Length: 137
Length: 447
Image 1: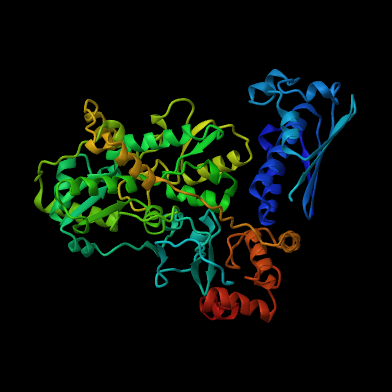
Image 2 (image 1 turned 90 degrees about the vertical axis):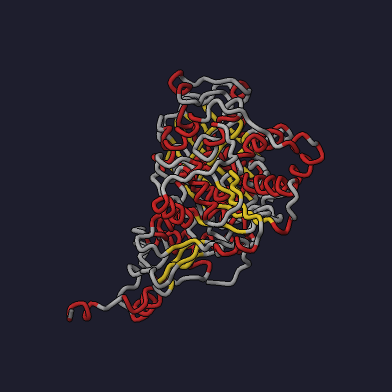
């Protein structure tokens, strides 16, 4: 099953649309609540990341028997130093973003914690593609 | 509908003589538990959480709450009315608490006991539970039984966040029984009758989530008792007997929104009202809010004073209770002596424990993942094909719900009047849902 969502830069109020929709389907499939939670938390974080840092993008979700693959692709500044970005507490978020309660530097580390596979392809000045996989079994 | 195992039982009933099948209740149900069949609202017991929303919105007063026969109290020598402070909030401020309690005695009760007597111990039970689960960040109050059931069916991933302690009336009933036994009353001669502001508490007495025994002998609907007391107040005027009620100001406010949260240190949240509770649970589940500490949740707006069986306006009732709390400001708490006995407390703690809260997801399409997957795919396709206007003419609350009903085998595609509105099959399907009240165009013209 395939889902596509658009991401609009700076539209924090719209965040969670993708994760809510995916959550509903996973509940219908009878996926274990703990796995639903991991998936939804990771997707929500990735969505927020793209809203906060990039200039728009898309979310593609594929649900298969036994796993979910979520690809969040943005046109954005890219991540110059992935190792730093993976550190808890490291953040380049703007003061405005922090004022909204985001930008604590927990985004990527939290995604890593909640997914079984995480792949980040990034090119400075072009964009970032985050591919997350969660296995249900 | 297909046969399924029933997990929940309810006191909310539909009066088919009054029900018009108008879809109002069905559209407001937070768990999608209602369908129209044979022109009447039909409730799925496994989905209903006893929130009472359907009863609140029904324009025909066709939904009612079954209660125990009031004459039941006559079976006991000691007849205790276990009354929540919300009850006092129903009356005009000209009537003092004592007068209201005198009326209850005239109705046949021998003892009046306020549920909120045990607030202090309840707070301790919550606190000990939280202290013994340091790995949990968010604790959801177990106070509102409708919230617990809502979590079971719609937010199963949050069942472990609920504090596993039974409702306050379970504690209060045990304490009053013990107090009367201390005074020499035989156990079997004591009947405790709880006055309920809502359907959820009846369900929690009769069919507890804990599956443990209750000490409540019967449940009386608050509106029923209000009418009886109001009548006596009108007939006999001021006649207050001295009573031994001894609540403190904080006890009185316990049932109001914010009444639990204020007892706890650190960050706590107080969420009231159905839509607010749903939104907050959704966010908790997504970890979109990081709530640390106690989250108090009440399905009814303003807490129990907004219960479906209350009579007075909830804001007026709240004000009355706040005034009463002000009057009691300087009162010292008198604690039941047995609370000093560790053995007794151990027994109480065991009685109040909920061993487990089981997730009861209403979403799962099939136990087998492959089967569920195929159904979910089909459901998405059907949903896209449906008009999306949520007209409810198919007897389901929304097009999404109809799509689910179709893949579950509970409805057919041609029950949608938009899909197949000219065929005989459609005509028959609509008739099976709406009965003979649905007339054809020709008949309407004749008229």
